[in-house]
Length: 253
Image 1 (tube, rainbow, N blue to C red):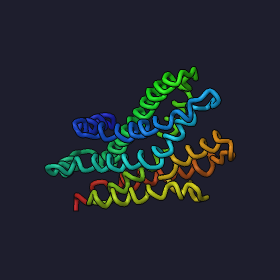
Image 2: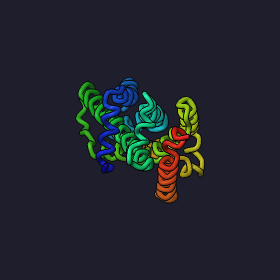
Image 3: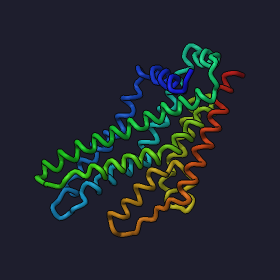
């Protein structure tokens, strides 16, 4: 069985679940709550209204709502196999456990991309309505919005891989959810320390914070590719390796 075929099967397994509804709620909440503050952004004297609105929305989304939703989605994907001893039937197939674990992680990353796409689309719709209501002619910075949507996805990959690793390692879903959410909560605090590159749960929020500093003009952006990129790659690879090795072991005991 090819890897692409395995991914297709995994997507079919969760097709009728409520995951799509779940990943749509956080971005919509962020955008809807931001509409109440749009009037202070869209003024003729403020040329960076779109950027300011995006940063204000993406801060809460990147630090908390996006990782929280991925924690729940990861557990839903993992627990799908526990119905009717499905995990044992799956492990009996002539497919390596590592390939199964990686396929499920790819599906989780697909849902991550979908959630950010919902955020991107909802933000454009809400911002367009707001500019028209305020009778402003500020052009839609589509490339800027697209760039930050891609950045949100890329910086969320290491944390998502770590969440999946923890989900695979713990048999009880309550433990994996609790531990992952406990790691998400201090993300905003760790982002303000020199140790943030070693803490993937704060990556998305951190890069948005640097953009906020640039827009506000009060501070110079301090985001550097080093040591962030090497640390992110290393953390992602370790999480993938551990989850691939541990997947299915507890069920086979």
